[in-house]
Image 1 (cartoon, rainbow, N blue to C red):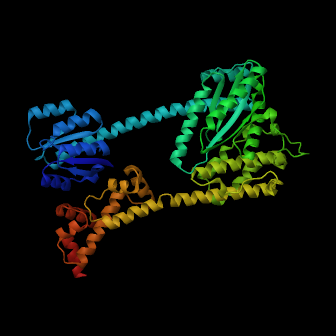
Image 2: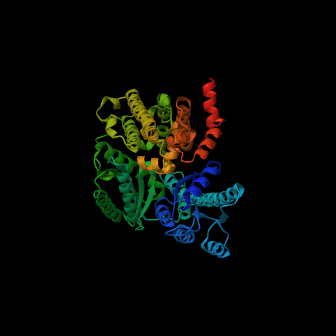
Image 3: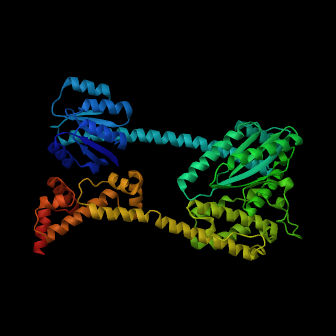
Length: 537
């Protein structure tokens, strides 16, 4: 919905013009009406309407001066000059300033309609071009990110030859070759309750980690909800030990500065061939899981890790798992889009994909459960719930002792998380919409009541509030407000003897003619006919 600002010092002319124009049919709404250019400029600076229809001659600041000031700051605002006389000098100046159109107050409705439609078309075209440009830019960024993540996946899956891996790296402008390699996995998650503050902190952390990785000896991969992965390069094993130690210290110095985050990390062993990087990844992931189980801000070096999480007699090896089949994003996707009633079936399929041998292993089961638990925690925190809402796995707890107990535990925490999702979806905006409806009920008679007024009242942007209101009620805001006012008008027409002009004012319409027009348009009859019909009945 395009926002219209009408500026004219003649109140009657302004009201008449507003009333006789069918704004909704143009996809527009009048956000405000003002009597001089100075007041209009102040409003434009704060609200930035899409189209301004202004008179030429006004006190304090005329239409040309207003237009010049606006075009200097807001080139995309469309301005239509509306005046009583056609003066060549004014038209020439208006064209020079960049005014969209110049119409006379005596012009017929079709001339006004054409001017508004042309302005709206230009706005929509600019928005379309901007959207396409943003989509294109985002698409390129996503492609680069996908290509880079694809390179990382190929490196840790050991499915490509060294020559193929080097070729993929060159396509991403990455210098991959080195004498030694080591993998570091790290995940930083917000621990605060204020979403805006958490987002700000996470952005700052991302920026500092990116800056740190720009040294050339670290290749950083952003793995979304799985955190970040780094390939550390060195000239020798001794050099690698020093670089790993320095890097861990640098990361800790960055992360310890922030109060409302938690982080988990693991560093894999040193390897000397590209084809062996997957071995470093497996060790890094094991250390990362140990860091998570300990639930402290730790980055654990796999070469120094104590294997307390391993169970005696369990001869299953993590390296026996085909990493290419280990798609943790399946859990994240199901949490966002899956059906609450289908959790049990989903987990059955998810577990079965690893085979009986894998799930009979205490070691692998623990890693898998920790990973799912972590995914659920991420999801809950994204909904502004604390991870304490679900039970955490404990390495000595009975849920880890066999496959059946593990399944029950995972199903339970997924069902709890998804019930919070359902509650959040229903309740996140329900209170806002209820408040909007209450406000309309209390203030429908105010002719200045608008989407902008309500958006300010509930501290939302007008566009966002419009979308939420429509989604929650199934009715666009403008239609809801109009229907509510007309409903009140029908009550007054039927049960009082007040004149139509009085009723018009009481339900929020200053102009009785516009009220009559709107009533007939929505009810199929005039207010007088409606009242007469009620008497006959």
